[in-house]
Image (cartoon, rainbow, N blue to C red; front, side):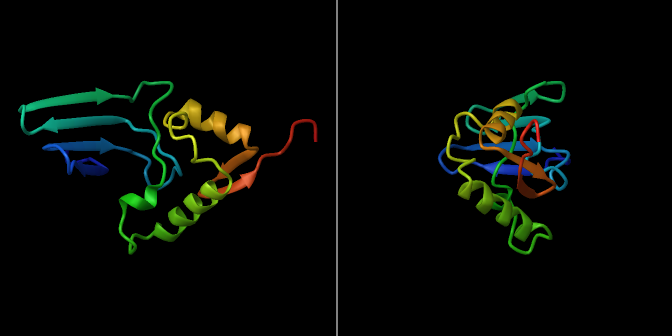
Length: 125
């Protein structure tokens, strides 16, 4: 738990989630490596390991998880604004995994270069 990148407290249920995104700062949409959820009412802990998954969950809207004084906050917020403008975040049910996200980028002719969104080069050009 001490290496958790994000700690999520549920407001509607007595649950705490510890989420592990090892490449949070460098990857614009980091893959979830592992998660641990503690159900405080049922006194149960669930652990999921995604480290060997070929299609792990990915994180979007990273600026929502950090404070405005976070070093990369402006870059993260700008990326989300551009992704919204390009319509990349509108289909949340299909972009939650790495494969779904890459498919959405390709459909929209987009590609990421660091924390910047750019037009993908068309094949044959």
